Length: 440
Image (cartoon, rainbow, N blue to C red; front, side, top):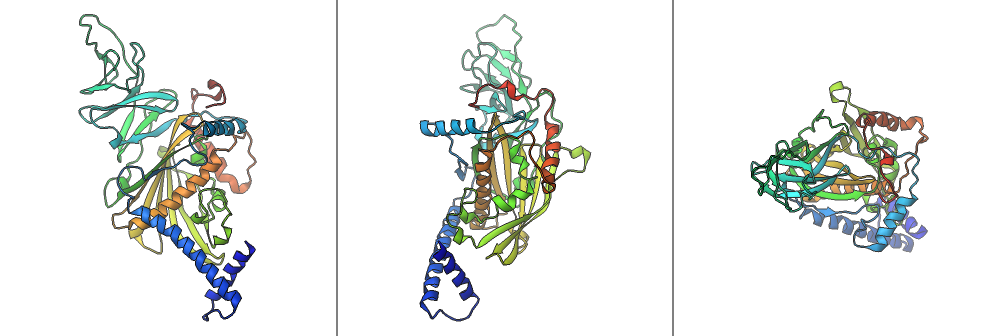
């Protein structure tokens, strides 16, 4: 490794001179450096190649981050359980904050179809009526407890239980028909939930007190087809507390350590196996803050985050200016501008966090750009974004919950964030002692 590092140093000196190598040492350094450059180009080329299929609404890839989801593999399942048992938990916050959370993409639920969903510890049924409207209710039929979302048939705007054919109206959840009972009047209903469909996505409102929506997600221009188009989607699950994920934006200091190395280093935190290749590093500068408008107290943002690239630790280039907006605990939008390339190269990515059960979160990450932005460019940008999330996930999956973390002055954003996020917990938010056992 020392030899390789020395070769890279020699090559840097050669780059600064105008002469070709004349001695054996410099020739070897040049050959090694060319080999390294070739490896880097191969890495970049594979990313570029992915770009040509980086279109449509189907997932670009489904990543398992930090450690793999263990379904169907006994060894991996036991590893996942062991890591959860080893996690140090001094004080576990309520697992489900109040707010809007992503359920699914619009094209996942066709007209006249139903599906089952699990979110915020709830089992739900969703269906799309003949009008095209999406309805979401509690999953279980009050007759004998069959799951309405598994085999449930859509009748106009109603959902029909697959067990005995009882029908419930999507408008209010009331029982509208018992097909085999003509005379008896039965009062029954399923609990309906607030949903909103926009930007090709369906959101679900969760509130522990049963309160109606107090705010709604903004419509995103990048999803409205106004010169922007969806370029790819990544979905994955992580095993962490929901609050850890949006807190990342307030924890500005972690960016320069966890995300400083270029994406060539890979998905693992501080993977130094190829540190001699790390002639590129990134430095982040920004400040997270809650929105000043009292009518937008559910919003926080990090404006004009400067991302500077350092080549060989010397040459500084401002490659990205990033604006981040958070709406409630579950919706984070990133907008990327590239000062050296102009407005034509703007891209956007979202990070939607949906609590499934305690310490299990579903992450949904779509990427958007203008139609004139080449696929290979979008792919490289999104690849780095996904690498960054994967490095975070490796930490989240093993992170403990500390009652009294030691924070210094430079960690002020974390303290402010934790005060801000408290507004999304209320008296009846499910508490940790509501759950039993270690296998969340």
